[in-house]
Length: 421
Image 1 (spheres, rainbow, N blue to C red):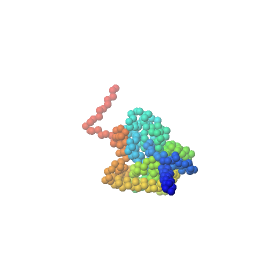
Image 2 (spheres, helix red, strand yellow; image 1 turned 60 degrees about the horizontal axis):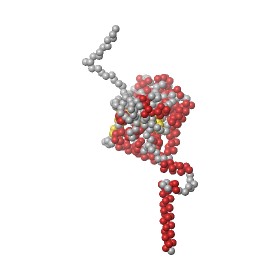
Image 3 (cartoon, rainbow, N blue to C red; image 1 turned 90 degrees about the vertical axis):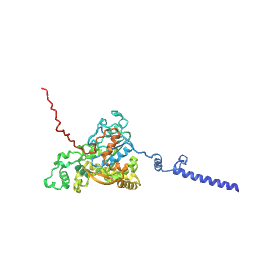
Image 4 (cartoon, rainbow, N blue to C red; image 1 turned 30 degrees about the vertical axis):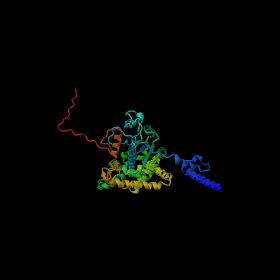
């Protein structure tokens, strides 16, 4: 009888051990190789293995193709802050003054010869000019840009609703100077730009200089590679859109800024904290033009190719919201709370400086608050200094400063050049 009890006790111990062992094998996969091969769903198994073995690592080679007047300075600042904290190599020009950007120019095979060399690379050793971060305005050319970036760059860009981008560029770049108004229409300064935009959009052909002007004529798709002669050719436009969709890892949308950044966090494998932001380069409300629905529709028609581009990528972005998974709404809520907390902690107010708003910081003098509230040019100075450049006080993020001639003191006479006969 005692032997029977001993057998029962031993059987119980073995049963308990097997039960615990099986539970461990299911929850941790530690004993997966020893499990019996039962029928299972292949898709579920693949996803499980991806979760176990394919945990992503943060992407650190990024090409951000900036577009004009789309909120791109804000996104550039987010990427630059991450790159600076992680000691990454940035594309920056040698001896740059005025604007830090390349505007609407397209790079050539030797354009990287004008860059500051990456850290620990000798100037002129162009073969080793390889960079992590590109956040500048330039026309898109994948082959050229790939040539000076490190391996496997992530390509991203940002679009804005075309009538809003048009209005912002028209005012910011002072395109209205080419539209003359009767004296009676110049009395109310707040309506001047509205009247000038209206006059132009009602009859663009009346203003040939504006028609051929940069920034207000399908400028977003032009920056991304479409030449101006094709802006009314739907076949070429659709081919360009398809190429952009293939080349870009993600196209963000200004009107879905927070949602776009949550998606970007997954693509870059960055934490949401890495993407918190304060809007940069915002215009004061007094400089914004209130456009009617009819006027906005005319602006979209004028920017026909940009409208096609924008509509396509809005729908693509919405598809990616679904692809993200069920946690999207919760992650978006958390991200917005983080951004709101940043503003509460760091921003005391806003003041107007020239054509832009600037932040006044709170008493919180932390490094985080300093980075987020200071003028964007300060970050550029830090980047250039780390890369060994001499810093010029005239470096800025888009506003060209006029250069005044040096005054010669009255007591200093100029030497006359006497030509020999």
